[in-house]
Image 1 (cartoon, one colour):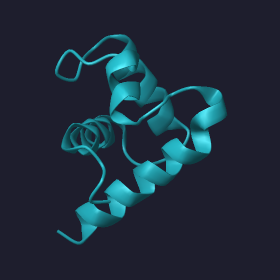
Image 2 (image 1 turned 120 degrees about the vertical axis):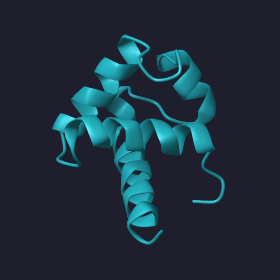
Image 3 (image 1 turned 30 degrees about the horizontal axis):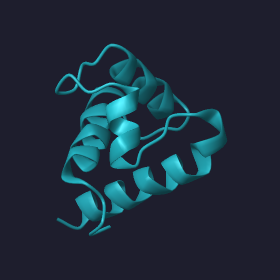
Length: 76
């Protein structure tokens, strides 16, 4: 978790606040937020540079990142 960029953590938490943690609704919200650049003007390209891909072939990694953020947030 320490290697996760703070912007990614904040992006995921932003999406959770808007939609909750239910998957795949959260994925849909993440894609919508990125597509419309609703979080700090960041789109898919910027998120990918930070280590979060919303591509369908990367869903396993994306879901793991979400789980890490949720677990860390619950313990803080």
